Image 1 (tube, helix red, strand yellow):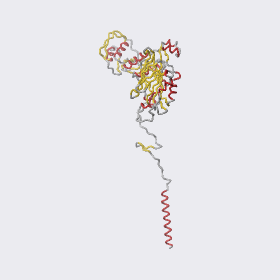
Image 2: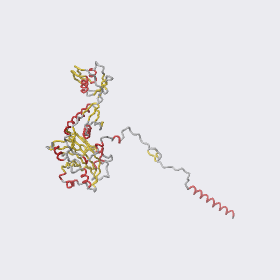
Image 3: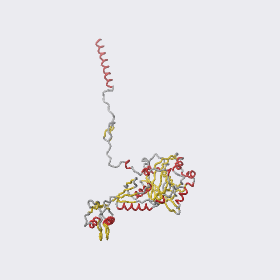
Image 4: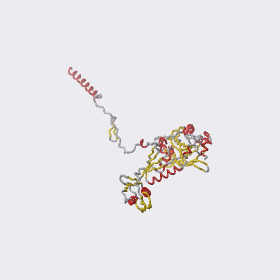
Length: 445
């Protein structure tokens, strides 16, 4: 009996120990090392202590540096409270000076010299055969020239021959070398009026002359190019200098969101402003341009729109053109980069003068994107009139199949033309600020 009781006690003890050991094995052990989760991206292990690794970028100018431009504050700001629809500036000489011409050539005379179908280098070497001056081509020249020089100075003879060959030369007196190249550099001494400078800049860019260096303090511009570039710029400067007017436009560009799911009723402008303040309606392939009186300006237009819709200013700025030329306003250059409409370009050609017996600004306004022309309007208007372009759907700038933007959202462009009259410097002193009867008398001259 005692023996059976002892066996029973051992059985219970063994069972308790086994239970205890099983329980201990189920408890978490405090001394086991814990590991953080890791993400594996493109075979690179990244955790919270990792240093970010970026792919190497090409040696290109960063976007923010690329967009730096000293003329942007001048182009992207409009003081609507102090706008003058007509201003007068004095006529100034616009001068083009070639740079890097080197030293003056020796005072030598040339007589009875002729050359037929010779390269410029060969013709100059023949001319300078009895001198210590050598001729070096820094760039290969391909024009062959022919001519006869009866009597002339050496500098005039070299000028003539290089112009015939459409090349440029510079003289290094220390080494006695004439260097020939097909590329030149020039400086333009600009007028003092900044709107005039921007008009010339835009006209040059329109003529496909780029890489312009402008010193706004000295009012000078430096450009480089070949013989054809020089001819284009010389023609442009001569034409601008002969003009008596420069046209400019101040611009506000809005995106308009109707408060209800209905389109804006633009006909309500008639009872709101009166039909006398709506001068003309010009339809385009897309949208419509309204020529309106000075009573409809940025403030009154915004008040009218706000009754039916919310509006956001997308871009604001100004651009100018010499009379009869063309220019453009890049909406994205003066707007926020995340706007859909930053691809929009507002181009203009125009001139001020006689229009069927009336003094008018005759302009063509073109709205385009990188995909091509969106719409255009031919607009004759009086000094002081404004343009309101409406009915351009915002969906015209959407590039995805679907969008959250309402189909009734649209682009509205407000444009206010200005006339800059270029007069004799002595006459400027006699002209007081133009307004009222004085402005009418000036425009009727």
